[in-house]
Amino acid sequence: MTQKETILFSQMDLTDSINTIKYVEEFKKDFNVVYSTFAESELLYNAAARSGISLHHIPFLKDTEVPTNRAEIDDKLQSIEQEVGMPLEKVFFGDREFYRIYKKNELTCLAWFIKVWERFRKIIEENDVMHHFCFGEDRLHDLVPYYLIKNRGGRSYLVRIVPYYGVTYTNDFFGRFTHDYNIKINKANFEDYKKHIKENKVYFNPATINRIDYYKYANAGRLFRRLQEIEKINWQDKDNIYKDHNIKLLPILTKKLWSNGIKGRLTKALAYGQIDEDQRYIYYPFHFTDDAQVRLKYPEGYNQYELIRNIARNIPVSFKLLVKEHPAYVGKYSIGELHDLSKLPNIVVIDPKISSKDIFNYSDYVITINSTVGYEALFYDKIVITMGNSFYDDFPGVIKIRDVSELYKILTDDGLISCKREELSRGLKEKTIALLESTLQYDYYHFYDEDNIKKMKDLLLIYINDQRKK
Image (cartoon, rainbow, N blue to C red; front, side, top):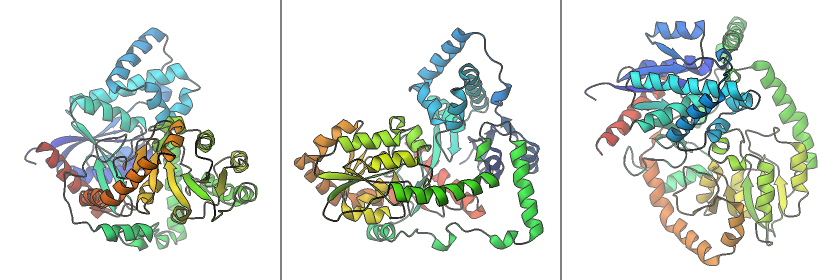
């Protein structure tokens, strides 16, 4: 680029705000960077100062005065809602930390939301921001800039993982990838990618997965200093509504002991059933309910237990519904609810240790809100029915519904099913190659490695230049 354009980085908690400085340092070489954060601390300001970075602090909710004029609040909210183009209640629900406080203190939270909106508007307009880099889509620090920049003709670039392969960017917070036919970064081999999925292997070095440099903290002195750093971060971020995103050692240990130990054994005894090889099944994987994929993109499915009951009521009598807990959320679901589901005649709750890829062998269809499991199922020749927006919505073999009452008609329509099977067989290779060729092979377990940060910046430059040509 001949002239540097301005890009916005935005963060919420102190830990991520400090880590993101590494990105800002690299991106400054090619962009004018504006950096906003909900965090405010000596640690952050010192780290930013060392890198020559100025910060825009978004005011804390606790500093917001209780408003007295409800009519004025409502007028401002209606104006913002028109700019957003969707109910603000969905935006609020999408941000779990904000929504938790909003339920208890409505007026103060609404006044703070208006303050956040106007603060971001001022930052964006005064700095002529037309680009926005982000890793997530469900919290206010991402959603508010997304709408403001979009409304002035700019774009947000959301980092999205392409399973097993790498990363790409999308401009759409609510659905499919937006670049999979425009950019050719590398050559892709469909059969090789399909093999990686079935063998559960990533394209980058598998040895890097969950890599922790234990030797770095083997020294007692180093370990003690790290613990001190963690506690200092927690203390300095205590007024931030997003403070729980920082590392908290004691809660992590106690929750793991309860969720993976005692509660896990109880759930196994009270809820888990067996797969009958002579029975026909439809597979529904539980979602991580507090993730953006549910809270923001399909809040109607937030009550997973009731959603599963409704799905079970709407499938043909020849099928049973297989359900399995999300592997990252095991032990956090209600034992009572899982037990109740297991007692329904056409529902089988199975052990989460069983891989979804093994479950595909027993399933005729996969129903999901927008889980990656649905994407994987396509490579096992399974028709996938989605309820929420997913990145693979426009892939062959996918049927999108908005209400579970549509299920019976779809599953008993032999002509439609035959057509979707043929579509999947003919079109999956072409669609997958288009996606992979616009994707950067990338170690997405280590976003803060120096080399990976540079790769991320270079990829963004390619995307921006591509869009400038249109």
